[in-house]
Image (cartoon, rainbow, N blue to C red; front, side, top):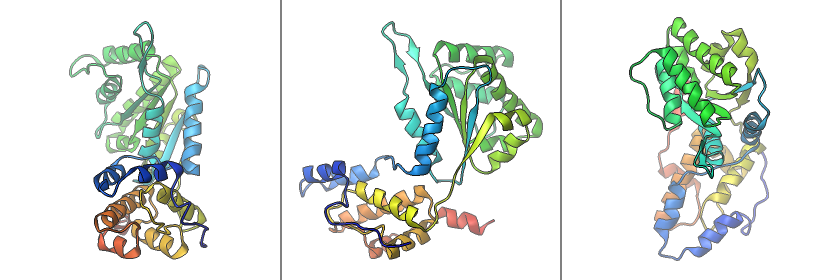
Length: 303
């Protein structure tokens, strides 16, 4: 790593600077609420994956649609990418009151079977679920609703949950995904941990259809420093914290193991603490006073 250039004037984005300037000295709660809200941090790997997913949404329908399998460690941005797509492709009603769902986003149930998977899709479409009923009938209803609502993409988070099931049930869920995709030429974007790779490689058709793309863990390098610079630009603090400077970047990395979720949590919590203590920047002392412990580091120790 090396020290990157940052000045008093450019440590905030124009939108964040405008927000800070609109706050009075008594608007501490307003700035804290901004820090507590969900936010999007754009970076190269995430933008590339979003572009790949959007290509699936926009491409013409063909008999054999390709899909995407996004692999990454826990808390490293997979869910943020999914939510970014959700926010951009929200459902809407046409002039004749017909509902369109360009994207349906679900989570794979913790112990998935065919019924659970179908009901998750129905919930994503805001439709009643089936507690009882024949699976073939439920499947046909799901396919009918997907067609009726002009669904262009099915996003499935936590696909590694399939691995928890006996091999027979794993095969049933995977066959269901293939059937839906084939029947209505529907591409899918699946998100999961490394465990998901084993599931999809067990089926040669799925392995060929789902193109793997990895969301790699961050390393302590200049890319990580640029990420910290981007994060700092969104923190409503009046003074620069120098998060991207070499020593501070190494320190932040050591606290979070570089996962973007924990970086975001650590720095936003630090910014809130700094504001409450009357400071306008994040210092090493502020971060240390949080007693923050990375869950990813604890996970690594148990391996």
